[in-house]
Amino acid sequence: MSSPEPATDRLLKTFLTLLNVDTYHGDEDRAVAIVQDLLKPAGIAFKRDQIGNLIGFWPARNSDSEPIMLNAHLDTVQSTAGLQTEVDDEGVGTDGSTILGADDKAGVAAIVEAVLAIKASGAAHGPVDLVFTVGEDVGHIGSKAFDPASIAANVGFVLDAGSPVGNVVTEAPGARRIYAEFHGRAAHAGIEPEAGISAISIMSRAIDNMPLGRIDPGTVANIGTVTGGQAANIVAPHAKMEAQARSLSEQRLDEQIDAMCRAMDAAADHFGGSVEYEVIPFVRAYRLEAGNPALELADRAIRAAGIKPNHVPTGGGSDAHEFNAKGMTTACLGAGYRDAHAVTEFMPHDQLRLLADVSIQLVLNA
Image (tube, rainbow, N blue to C red; front, side, top):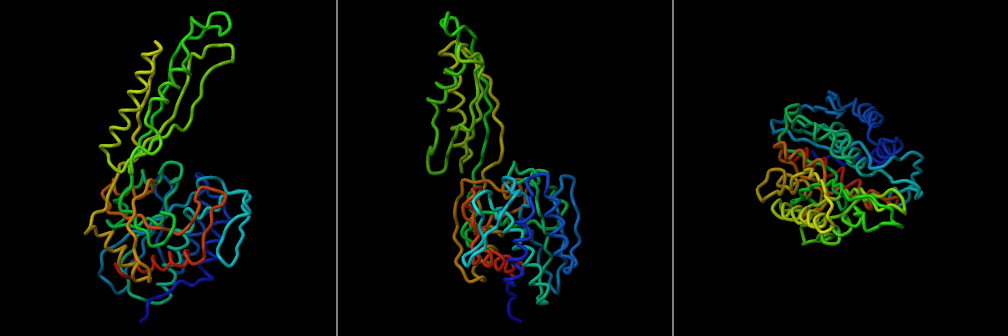
C-alpha cells in the first residue's frame, strides 16, 4: 500500500475554518469544537483537562508500535477579530489589519489532516495521543498545567517552530524574567531638586550598565517595559522595569541575570536610593542529543516526506519546553509559517502541505 497523502483542498478548508474563529487565550473553545467535529469520522475519544487542553486518543490499527504525541496550540498571540484572509496562488495571508494565526493553526490543521488521511487510507499505524494546548502564546499556560500521566506517549512532537518545514529544534533557551521597582525620594523639581532622589535616574543608570541585546551567540537580554514618575515638577520617587534574559546555557543565563541584578544594586547605591527585584524562572533550556528517540523519528519522518531534516537552535519558546521539563522526550518541528506575531504573517500552500505530510510520516514511521 502506498503512503497516504494529504488531501490538499480539505487541508486548506480546515486551515481557513480554524483561522476564521478568534481563539485568543480564553476563547479556545471555538477551535476545540471545530477539531472535535472534524475528527468525528476517525472515532477519536476526546477529553478536556482542568485547564482546558483538548486531549484525544487514537487507537492503533494493526500495529504494536509505541505511542507518540502530536501537539499544536489552539490560541493566537493576539486577537484575530475582524480577520480578512487573502488566499492567492502562493499561500494565505491577511489584509494587514490583523495577524493571521498560522502560529499555530497550521499545526492544528496539519494534525487533523494527518489523522483523516491515514484513516481514509486504511494504513496501519500505532497509537497516537493528540494534545491541543491552550494559552501557549501568553505563557505556556496549557502545557505548564498538562499532566503527562493523562496520555500514554512519552515521545512527542510540537508543530510550532516557524519556517521552514524540515527544521528540527535541537537547542532551545532557558528564560527568566526580572520585575524591579526602584525607590528614590520625592522633592519639588523647581525649588529643591537637591532634596530628591530620582528613581528614574537609578533605573536609567542600572539599564545603562547592563549587558543587553545579543550577549553571545546563545544569550540575549532585553528591557521590555519601564514606567515611573508622577509629574514633570516632581523628582520621581518610584520607577518600575520589566526585563528578560534567555540563553541556551543555564550557566550563562545565571551569569547574565547576576550581571543585571548587580547593575541595579550598584545604581541604587550610587544615588542613595534602593531597589527591589524578583527573578522569575520561565522555562529551562533543553538540548536534544544524537540518539534522542524524538530526534531520530523526526528525521526519519521528514526524509519520508521527501525533504532533508535541518537541526537548528532557537531563541524562542514553545510547549516543547514544558513537555521536556515534565520528562517527555519532545521535539519542536518547523511548521512553515512566516512572520509570526506580525500582521505580515503568511502561510505558503506548499509548506502547509509538507507539514501535513510530515505529520503523516511521524505516525506511520513510529
